[in-house]
Image (cartoon, rainbow, N blue to C red; front, side, top):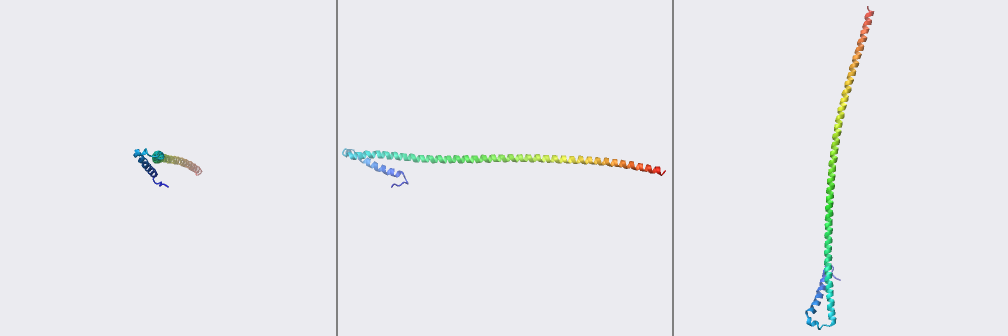
Length: 167
């Protein structure tokens, strides 16, 4: 079984053996004429194996490069998603802070209006109190005057009656 830690290793070994086999007969061209047809077939069969191994090596290199490209795409996508997340969080925080500021302003305005309404109500209550006190004082004064007038009239009549009887 082959070592799978480096998948290119079996390809390199096979290519090296095939090249040794191919370079031997090719280098000795005069001797090739003396080769048997079986040896020629074996040499011709080795060449396609070398080509297949070369294509397999190129395919494996393309495969590993594609894997790297996919990994880069995943990393890039992860970075884009992280960036979008951070931007969304920042935007949510900004909207939240703006909403808090608006709510605080509305609260302050409401408190201000409530204070103004309270102060106005206090002033109205004071005015109503003063008006009521003034009216009560007038009524009291008029009532006292009327009572004094009634007393005076009653006393005068009583003295007149007394003066008639004593005379």
